[in-house]
Length: 253
Ligand code: NAD
Image (tube, rainbow, N blue to C red; front, side):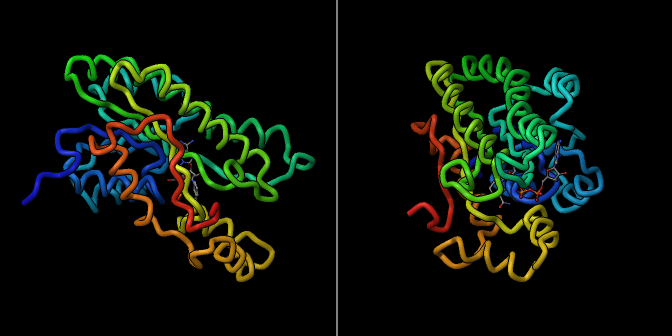
């Protein structure tokens, strides 16, 4: 049996109970990583452990700075931090509320700053001691940050900010063995996307519209996304940092 591509690495993932975070937790474990899957959703974290018993889970709300610090204090140094948590709120610059704007920035951007601030010092010491490469992967998006879409003012602003945060971390720590990249998926079939479709005035048309905007002609599945996360988490990508990598079904051709 070949050794896993993440053998010996410790990977922590936020928002890992469902969707892309969950799929990546399973994929990282399958590649030999020790995985710490965090989320606010206890039942789905429990079902993740049922699916893969080697995965360790932690309840973590990424909005809770004290809880983030406490988790960092009791966790051995990470090789990979995957900041996946994020939400979508609707609205243009005219009708997005200030509360929705603030909530979006708190969960989508400030949470990543909190996680990085808490975990980076340990990761840098680990990189120095092991003369190895440690890395951060931040979940951005193709939608509304790389390419504009209607009705996604706050979402687009947050995901563009994630790319800026990613490049700044990459620049600050490139000499210390820490890489930082952002992932920009197109429209991925996950529970949150299903929720957006179900809450549309015409769900059937909403799904057709989501599919139609991707020239490849279908939604992405989580399995379209996990290979890039494995690549970015592994040493195969050790010459790659500060990038915003698109997996978007041809939207940005
Ligand atoms: P999902 O809805 O399937 O799962 C989201 C998970 O986030 C849930 O398990 C939920 O409990 C958790 N969560 C919500 N608030 C949290 C908090 N405060 N702290 C910790 N966990 C929390 O998610 P998804 O569609 O796979 O999206 C994951 C990420 O990918 C998000 O950042 C999203 O913006 C981004 N993204 C999604 C798509 C898409 O089309 N689905 C496309 C591009 C980017």
